[in-house]
Image 1: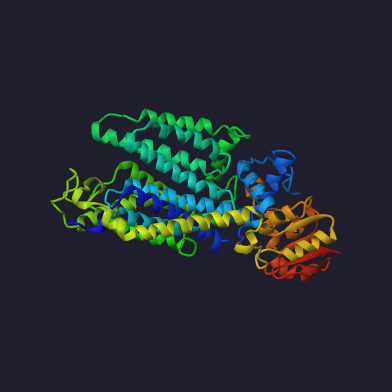
Image 2: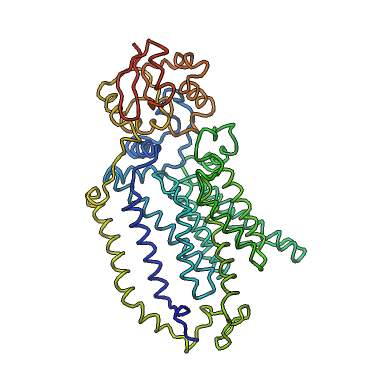
Length: 517
């Protein structure tokens, strides 16, 4: 047998990794560069505030929650956003988003390749990685969350490599990673949960196998070291415990935030396609799964279904398991070749360890040599060119990014900026961030920091916007003198008709301004 499909060498693996990284970067930079997301604006303003003024510990942006405690746990991301936006505009934001997406693609590929035993697995790695990227698509908005998924994938990779090689240096990197992660995004807590479930699964599994409780002391030490490292932040214990506030609606009204809704076919169709495929390979699989894998699968997919924001983490955990099962099914379909050197666990199935003299990688090298020589430099140079244009301040020439008028009330914010309307503002929730950035000093009613406002102000906001019983009392309570809301909301449609003390002052494509007479 001398089938080129089983011929591989290390240079080809590196080439494919480079191709994947560069292609992912270019795809997100050139084709997924719409400026979306309503929180990025107050993140940018907060980055400016930290660098040029002070590190806020309480709310300073609203007139409703002014002075309330504010755990600024994403301060590192906000500084990065501000520096990129202030120097390179929207193009800088697109660059960092594209880099994190490309990093996630590369790490997913490395995780799968690490677990691949079949030489043909490289092609399968690429295919499954692309499928995973489709499932990750909701992660790549303009927000601190973009940093969390690459760190989570890096954690999975480091633990996987350590289990294969038992090199302590791999574990040492994990607590150091958490020092950075905790200051970028609250997703570090999911990383701690991953390590904890992994340890617990190992302990319980060994209890069933040997009747004794045994655990990996090094991994346990890494777990507690990582927790201690998470205290290295400006907020101390408050940042470490911050994610616990999302356990229920008591502190943070999760029902107010769309991304915390349960997964459904309308918001997570790719995830459910993956779940169906996962069930299918489990049905045909003959190999038993380890207890840690089962526990991780159940935990992360349960919470992904409960909160569709977590589907990317569930896919990241499940995809290596899915890949293993696909490898198993492929191995059962390939006809064994007794002329190949055998691994004890694979009866003649071609693997990277069974390459011999008669299976030289040269046939594949000759066939694809020019392909690699052309594609790799082309993609890498294209990525370097796009980055250079961005850092030269000419990103708009190739990215053509801008704020969409159909998403943001740009004209009406300009009206407020020009008129300098005094008094307290009632604003649409999703407009708050842009008002904070573009109208310095103007206090908002609410913005995307729902953890600061809590259920009480969120309920008051909803009551006014929907004109429910008591809405006028709330307007009076906060001494509201002008309103900027979506024109299709009840308040936007009927305020001037129901209460003649309010007059329509301005209107743009999506919003209206009312001013109290």
